[in-house]
Length: 319
Image (cartoon, rainbow, N blue to C red; front, side, top):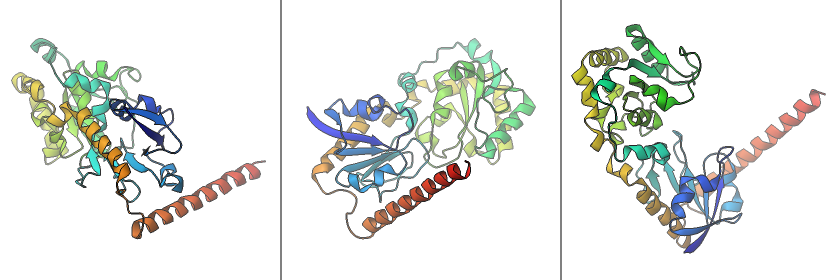
């Protein structure tokens, strides 16, 4: 097996490269060596990745958030956006990498008709109050019809935050599965989780979420003219057993073909980044792109100086 030198920078605190899906998938074909002079540099966010010490290697940007990659500072990127940019980009929603996603590859509805129907109305598990205001507005609309069980910090009415979200939402017919923000391509685990436990997601977020999951298996708030109209539809489904049970007829076609083989696609994409090492880099080393990176480095350097000065003065003045 060929040896590839790699490094991960700008990832979140506690990140362990060897536990990442990138490391796991690449290890199928290569011997991976962690190195300060890598062939491949993987970055998530931050400023370490743009330093000149890494100009010799191929840079691969990865994000699990709704951030658009900047191809002026990376050769390749993996993210949520529906970008077509030659061989430089792959869309890979984060939920594919979750161990729980495996339960959807060969999905089987485990609850009986009676178990599906004889559950409480709806759940809502949110702790971040800074998300899109439509999320809280929709919760309040449904809560006027029947009490919605809130298991997060926001509007908690179940005696504290739930420890096991999947177990909690499995006890309800519906789950309000709104994204923090509605961005094209940005589908997260919020839509996936209710499917795992045989609960119908009420989803608002990525307008094209139907490309990730069968749109007949969830209530897509995006297609309604208003939140009020969507809430009225949920009330109608809740009172019609046959209409509700119909959402469980698509277990064998719940995810798309990419989702069923996402590891193979990811390996192919990553192999292409390795092959690019011996060819011309995808970023331009001269012209406006080079000037752009130089100015960006200068801006970050200036920011670091100002921040350090503020920290120093705050300590000095505080004495």
